[in-house]
Amino acid sequence: MAMRRQRARNELPAAARRLRVASACRTLPMSLLALAALPALGQDAGATDDQTAPAARHFVMQPRISVQETLSDNVNLSQKREAGVISAVSPGVHIASEGARVSGTLDYSLTGIVYSGGQRPTQIQNSLTARGNAVLVEHLLFVDASAGITHQSASAVGPLTTSSYSGTNVQEIGTASISPYLRNRLGDFAQLELRDTATYTNARHSVVGDSHGNLAAARLDGLNAGQLTWWASISSQRTHFRASDVEATDNQWLLGLQWRPDIDFKSTVFGGRERNNYLLGSEADSTTYGATGLWTPNERTRLELDWQRHSYGASHTVALDYRLMRSALRASDVSAVNLGQPQNNSVVATNYDLLYLEFASIVPDPVQRDALVRAYLSTLGIDPNGQVVAAFATSGPTHLHTQQLAYSIEGLRTNWIASLTQGHTEQLGSNALPVGFGNFSSVRTRGGSLTASHKLTPTESANLSLSYQQNLGMAISGTEVQSNLRTLLATWSSRPGPMSTLTVSLRHAQGGGTGAYTENAVIGTFVQNF
Image 1 (tube, one colour):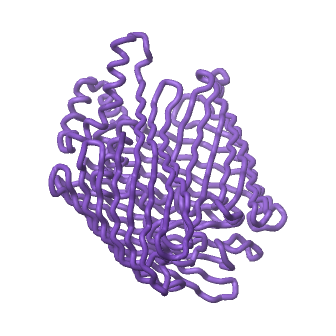
Image 2 (tube, rainbow, N blue to C red):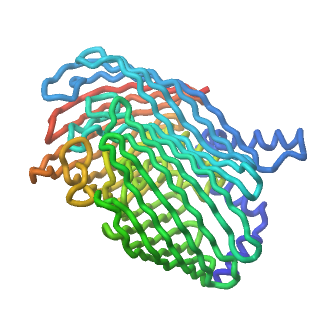
Image 3 (cartoon, rainbow, N blue to C red):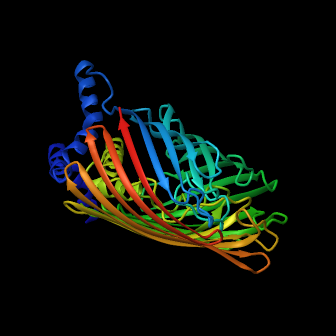
């Protein structure tokens, strides 16, 4: 039955599919749809001049500049209040491209920050999100790459800040990854993939959080017809942490069977041997085994299950994505080893992630959808990278267990985004290095946020956001140390021009635990796109 449904979907005329998307898009503001359609218009124009050009070509480059003024009655976010002004100027650019051989997105901004009041010097901050892939040799050699620059807490239980511009417990983290791989078919027997992945993490002005690693892997996938197929893999991973001068290693040899009774469902069982030193002693050799499952009954639902036994404890993933025309739900429970990447970022959904999932049925093309989501969030005055729980740096391998429930719903004029998150990061082994910046054996985080946005006019909107975060660190001595932050943010947003956005926000924040403080601030931001 599922096979027949899939064939029917594939046989649906292209014109009918376009009509269905167009009907859904009528519910969105026309200015946003026009922005999302710009790449397609460029593609059609190019096809008119050159009928031999490849079909799929999308390219968007949009420079911008942002100016922000923050008037705060506690510019240092400390118990000793001192009023001041924070001025920030941020030139930036957003690039999105999708072609036959190269595709990817890049969003970068460089921010200069000047403080009037308080004791803080002028700062320069970077922000980057980039990912892409390329075909180097047709049907043979490929490469995936990604890079990012984010801001996280320098100390896991230090004073929590309202933004990267405020407070002193802020650290800039840069990450990069490049993964070339070769994929080739070995007759009718199997498909071979050889992959080498290099990763880098660098903390600005600190060695805590610095690491570099390499993962070399080879995999064979059987090509035998039928519901049951086989695969085999071998991998070797090494990660060096600069602050502790520790090198974590993990080697695996696995054999697996995949069962796919239907196009909507597949499952895998596997087993083999594993050798690692995550418990920070000599390398330990042990048996490992596990199972995975993936269920996609339709285009709106995806359920992923993964469990694997290790010598240091089991890892697992339970992730559900479900979307309707005007809403999206994401629920996840992830337990895994973290090898120096910024905590939480890989498993916690942002505002951008939720709306990108929600708009999948409206704009299937990833480049056009990216432009639509960013424009939509800009119109509502919502931070696309907003997360409930801030990340923090580590100096060795840790065990991370994170749970999240996030939901977004879009009405005709009112939108809601809600998120709940909790996590537990702990050292691996009794002789392991401390977690984060400080002598902590474990850190628990929890938080929640609720954002409501309402369209006042076609060019104006207002939103109200409530958020709470708490970090609780268990010191090696047995003492508990905690910090928390409650924030209330009210924002009015307007589009004075087709390519500009003006927002005015009122913020009230209360920090508790270590470095308790109270802050009230007025924030004005103007963004001009070109």
